Length: 68
Image (cartoon, rainbow, N blue to C red; front, side, top):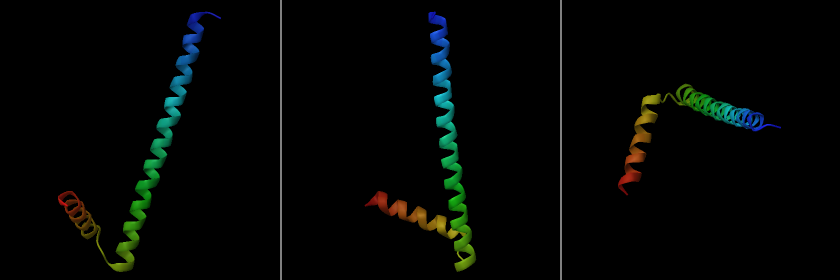
């Protein structure tokens, strides 16, 4: 087997591994975003809390955590 064929095969394998890794990351990101959206929708429907209120509370928690 020539060195060129080995290099091409290695390149194809590395490209495939990177592609599948990126796809997994995208699937996880989309799943997380949809889960957060559903949770916010349920909070709004069940408790009447708007997402702006949740966002303000999260910001306040982060600020309190960073100060202490």
